[in-house]
Image 1 (cartoon, rainbow, N blue to C red):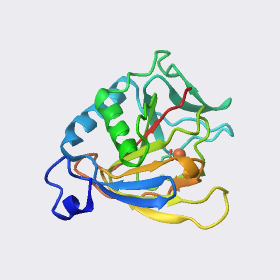
Image 2: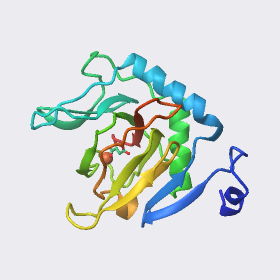
Image 3: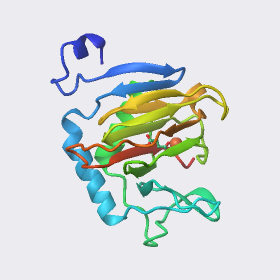
Length: 221
Ligand code: SIN
Ligand code: FE2
């Protein structure tokens, strides 16, 4: 909530926010898990037990190094036909698992904290990064409505988030992300190029040797 409370320590659970502006419309919220940590991790485990991590193919035919899964009404997929959102998991032919309420509520609260009240995500992409895995600079632009922000939660081992500009070229900032950190971007930053630098090997008690990223989006209208 306020710097005063975080200066007093974040043991209080709900008084946990330290918010930094990255750029207009974009905020970094550090250490957001608090007492929800176990429920968030259990929810991720429940989803990925139903719909396994897989390495999808890019339209160019390469295998993504990041392993992904999804929950919510829509899941982001890529294959030879391109990038898009679909309502069924291509691996199972079934609808994606429902987005667990704890994840939806977490994303909604983080968006509100960053200045986007009323966020109602219908998609949560679950990315798993092993050491050495990266995600190249890209824009999130497969969603219908760019007035809706992106909410991205980091779990497990640290990563370096690459924050570029509205064009592919130009300076890129490197922002260290740790377990429980959230990046929210929308408004004038909604189409900023971003990515993840190659992950360094590490171990985290919550996830072992990997980083998990949850990206919440309003993908449909
Ligand atoms: C993404 O941009 O899709 C993922 C970013 C991240 O892993 O933090
Ligand atoms: Fe992205």
